[in-house]
Image (cartoon, rainbow, N blue to C red; front, side, top):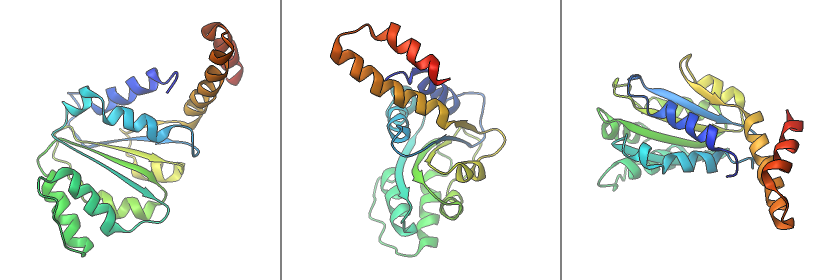
Amino acid sequence: MVGCDEEFKTIKDHLTPQSAKLLQLVSIVGMGGIGKTTLARKVYEDPSITSYVYKQAWVTVSQEYTMGKILRCLIGCVSASSDEQSSDPGQLAESLRKNVKDQRYLIVIDDIWSKEAWDSVQRCFPNDDNGSRILLTSRVREVAEYAASSSDYEIHAKTLVKLWAAEGFFGAVVEKGEVVQEIGGRKLKRID
């Protein structure tokens, strides 16, 4: 992603502070197609993040979801033996909770659309005061705000829209062989 270094660093800083031991949530919110998932994936795979946490999991929720699939996906990411056969969401939730209990973890919940989906999954993530984090992406601001507490952090759509526009603009400029920094800087100032 072009121009997302500042947001990337900000998210990383919120996910890895050694002093903040409480479970925290970071949200990336904005319209579809602006790079929320790409930015989250870049953070998720960053060596400073993978070395900070003991367990990581990524799940895409979307509008149409089943809790069983979501929970089995998360269990498969955090468990050495991912042969959880239960179809009972309560048993799956307890299995997931046990697998991340007392572990510093990063859970990415990508493309979540509803408060109900958050309510169903959030109870699986214990707050063991060990610096665990949840990174959430959503098109729906109300969902991100609902999931967040006062100490949590949100990347706003306006920032990502600028990055999205810059990426498209920079691609066009490079093809024509013009000076990217000069022209791109002038154009991005107009977006503000």
